[in-house]
Structures are given as structure tokens and as C-alpha cells.
Image: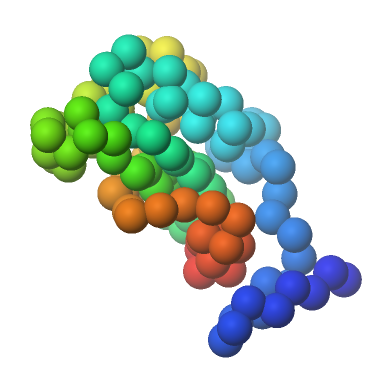
Length: 120
């Protein structure tokens, strides 16, 4: 068992590089790359992880945490979220859609990814 100390929490295993959603393997990186490829460049960083909220108690659904770009900030959080959600739905299969939602944050990174993994 790997143990990483993140004060005051412990993550008891490393995060997975794929999510199992509706019986399908989903790469968070694929969703992140799709969001970052939006032509209006509304975000500068993103992290995707599985969160509770599926049809059964142990099923995970994808959720994105985004950092707005200056263009995204000018447009507003609500509009950016609507546009990014529509963008993902146009380009990815239904089971890869962000059913866990999209949230705006100030920054994402390694610590944030571990925190998301622990709290989900």
C-alpha cells in the first residue's frame, strides 16, 4: 500500500489513470485535453476526476475543475461552464460527459488532484 501524507489527510493509494464509468474505461486526460482544446481558450488549466453520483453507490462520474483564462473571466463562470459542457457533449461519447459537473477554482495541480481523489 502506498501512503502519501497530505496534512491533515492521508491518501491511501495513488490516483488511477482511468475511471470506470458505466462499465467503460475513461481517461481523465482525454476529457482534460478536450476542454483545453476549446477554440475560445476559456480556460488555462483543468483537472478531471471521478466523483460519487452514478446510478449505483460505488459508480463514479467525471467532474472537471477549471481555471479560467482572462477571456473566460471576462465571459463569466456560468457562460464558460455552459460552453464547455456543450463542447464536451459535441465531441465525446455520452459516458464521458461531465455528469459530475464543472467547477471554477483558482488553481489545480498535484496537491489538488490528491485532494480531489481523497474527498471523492
